[in-house]
Length: 367
Ligand SMILES: Nc1ncnc2c1ncn2[C@@H]1O[C@H](COP(=O)(O)OP(=O)(O)O)[C@@H](O)[C@H]1O
Ligand SMILES: [Mg+2]
Image (cartoon, rainbow, N blue to C red):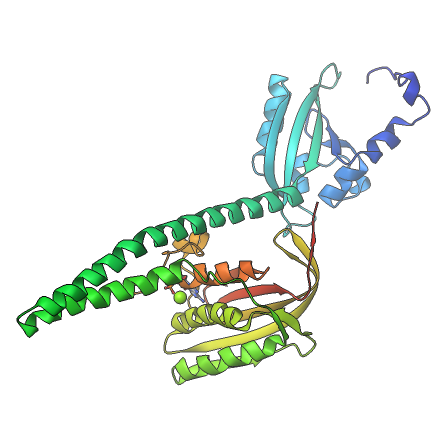
């Protein structure tokens, strides 16, 4: 052990251990065998383990998953260099289901008689990375929405010209049998225009009126019942305590219907779909926190969202179906975002849940 040194005078009245415990950064000191000889309070929180339990344990045993951190520790010890790694996802042994994102700095402490010790700084970035990822995702979606709108605009103008020209041509045709061709042009132009209109999303600003969300759900439920095959069961599981909220009825119906129709298509000839509502207190929607929000779930027991499109599901034109347009979710997302909400989904074979989150009152931005 190095000789005890007094702290520089402004700090002379403090116990070094108290100072370390006051840090928000987790500090762990390891011996040459990478066993814990010290952990401050922040580190004990991060690892969900008291110092008494952690003391003497191999550092590797503190994690269910440490994502290469142990190899980095060995390199720092063997090469005597400082190593820093950002955004390492780990799962502490004590809470193996909960992953945390850490920025890690490892500093070798030379001159130990028992070999090189390591000072490990663990800074918890879990919350920050989650928020950054979400806002990056939002920025990408926003970019793709803008591109879609521009593209839609560029396509619509010449389409109008094309349709007009076909109509003029139709009048000039001597042989009525040839009208078949102009009809094809006009119909296809109309189909493309409708497609492009959907793609560009609803341009109308939401007009929110107070109403119960179940009025919207019931409307969608009845449409769904009418469209469902006979062996498809549609259930309702409403939370009667959901208070009224300001909703743009038509827009929310459209979004919910797009999601519900996907569920119908996913289950095919037979299956189970549940429309569920829940009231949420203190809900995070995007970067805002709302005291009250409602969650509308559409759950189905179909095969689940194909693995290959999970990351891009909400982009326009992304589809997993042979005759899909890939617009349903893009439009739903656009609508719900405009209404201050968000759409989330979880999917595994046999259980897929798409959730619409909508605020029931205005939120407060997070710092
Ligand atoms: N409930 C669901 N179960 C399985 N896959 C789904 C579900 N909802 C959406 N998907 C997948 O997402 C794709 C995109 O959906 P969407 O944007 O509505 O476009 P489309 O329905 O025209 O394909 C679907 O083609 C499907 O592969
Ligand atoms: Mg769809």
